[in-house]
Length: 139
Length: 139
Length: 139
Length: 139
Image (cartoon, rainbow over all chains, first blue to last red; front, top):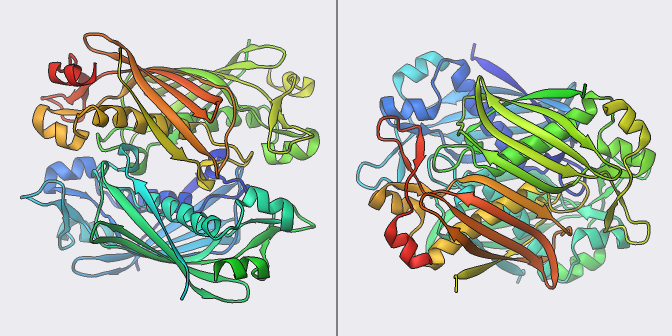
């Protein structure tokens, strides 16, 4: 059975837009935090530590599909459940399910890849095969 | 032929993450701005004005699918081209194409709806059929 | 003796800039959340509830002075201690002290006022004398 | 006479909070962008280029004092005027004046320093004397 992690988020005043509801890019910030939280819960160090070990600077999103079902506002606590649905050679599909109590608020599937800096051009990044030791910890 | 608008964005230091590239939720902020820019370019007033006319508080995203192709960093100017691919009764599909010169950076399709506050519960919002006058201006 | 509250913040990847450290406007987001957290801990409802009772839409910052002492990065937990140093008739001085373990990271003094919407022009806000019942709960 | 630069900002829906006005940490994002804009207008390269030349990773804020006078909302264009009021050996005082037409919205004085990474501990940064060539370009 695959691992999953959960992360709670307190919704704040500044997360909400003039309609009084969470501005949707905030969900992506939180799901990005939930993505790293998943890896750190599996024993993977934060990227700034990992970079010195194997050059990995993070797991940028290549594609994502997100569905918003209900709205939330500040003063509420929401929960993000995160798991990896599929591990391929160079990418993985990470799924986030955002709930408030019984309510489903948002659901997202992200395609991400472990990336390193290009040796010849420091400003470019490229995907590498998922490192074996990370796969072992997280699968 | 359908209308399209373009909006330029100067990428700033604070838009970038520790990997030195634009943090992807920023693209969603910019595409949300490009979405409103599209409507305002067609002669639709900003939501805080429109709300007093017909109750519309905005066009929340119900679903979106986004693909990231190349990275960008600060000091660069990117361009967002926005159009509506499909108008349905209660929702519309808005497409954003983000480029830097010839490079495609990111592409997104958003399903959005015009929403008003619920008469009985001010904290809830609900979709309405796309207002005729807005349809006429934007199609 | 005056009341004080504390709020923990997990620093996330997306809170950090290309230098790898927390981008300073994030501290202001967190201190704004700590400000509301202070009031809610004293039994004041969130603004969207309070607005229906007495019209108060929040406590905008009129002025602030902030000093940054040490940097922080993602994967770290920081703590914000918040108290009100002075209550005047229409404004109050709220002080936030941000620490990581023993380290002082940042210190800010904010002058804030309770504000309501202008009766004649909904888009304008104006300060009111600090409501007596709020003063009693928080002092 | 000292140099000054101006930068325009289109206020967007997502920059505003549930009160419908610009959430104040956004001003700090914009003033940070205006700070780099000042240097780039004087011919200083963006930090990711400069870092390879002399190690400078940016000009973190050590302290700032900010006063908010009037509010703004989305659909409006604001202007930020930036100048350096004082150059000291290791720090400089940068002043930002934010206006909308004739209205003063916000005013800030920031104490900043040019910083490099610590040679022994890459995760730490430290201030250096303001580089002579930068001083010549900007004064």
